[in-house]
Image: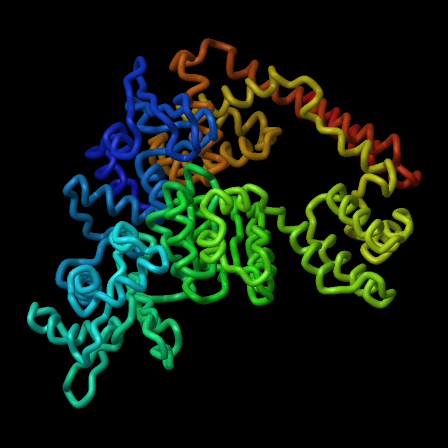
Length: 599
Ligand SMILES: [Zn+2]
């Protein structure tokens, strides 16, 4: 969202007609508490309300998980849609027509081809669904689904349907309802031959596939009659402008709020698995569309959570897919756990065979990705053999390289040492020799780095913390304060997030005299928004205009602290400096620092 710079007039126009209390109130039950409103946070599960909405400031803030922002970011975060899309949605809600809104994909214009395509897809979904539930010819399909545990309730929840066993049942119905047949072709529901239209899906159970906004964009049709899967068990809609498999996640739109609330997503391979899991009460379940996980999928999931539980099939293909997914997910800083299903079982089978409770237990016992990979590699080999031991060692070294901290690496290597019955120290040393750069910071490598890594935060810093926060607060209120802080501190806030925020404030003042807070928040990333909204509430009771000398005091506190931290850092480095050259350089820096702070 930080890169999207929507013109301020557009933004003002929408926000002036939007009440944040109304918007949030559509998702969260709010009760008045003084000047603010309180409720249960929709972004994390909680039983006592720590979620606050301030109509005066036009922002919300959760003191449990830290989430905060304005009405647009609320809709964007909760609905997992982009910032411009959220803005467009609020504009429509407020009855504002935005001429030149830079929206990549807002609501399609009425009568546009895209709107017609959505209509045809929606209509067809209704047609298939009605046919499955009411047609006499659909009896066999209904029995089949019931036999697989898909009750009428499930059929309705997931809008499952049946494509009739006719050449042109859908085509005729589309024509009778005066919908454009060419859109039936464009959306992959119909084929055209010599000017006549035919149904693409025949005698298949139809699972509608929706985009992240909840609009149907295609179908997956499953064969259900004995010997009827000559064309494959599943036929999907062909790739169209709307139906892009490597971007679509099954059940994402329906699951998004549950994913937010639980801060985790259960990721499956097949949509029958998702349906079974949702039926078992795991509403945060999704699946990719019969393809491997892609970066597009990962980005979409990242909008709503940072924890994934992989629930792939318990077979070789499932294991390989899980390993690939782990690599993609950990690269995007997801915390990944894997459910280990018994050999040969997919999640749907497992739930049917062992029940929902047993499935829940398995999910709660999901193993961290690295342990899963370790176990997987180990299972492929026979560690009685020396050659296999050697091979295993290399695989575990490769795995260790992907780990973030030296401690995790060390734990993994110790496990390896035990499993191949080699002395721990020699395994650690071998890994260290093979990866000299990476191992520099390891705890058992030497104690030099350990001394250097003492966190300055432990030095007693409440006055300094307060000073930096107050400065940000008054910089937001007053351009003159911002410029003064810039001149005096020259960007040397100690905390990196606050340092970034200060830079954004100064950028803002290069073109504006005062800060429109709700607009300003759009520039920032989530972490910065959390910090700003924190500060805003923390400083709520401060006077609008600071007393004389207060700003100067804050500046001097920050200066002193930054000096103290830097000089202590330099002194520690000096204590362990190996060469005279290094020492001289550090002394020079220390001197320079002292001069700067005396100025
Ligand atoms: Zn929260």
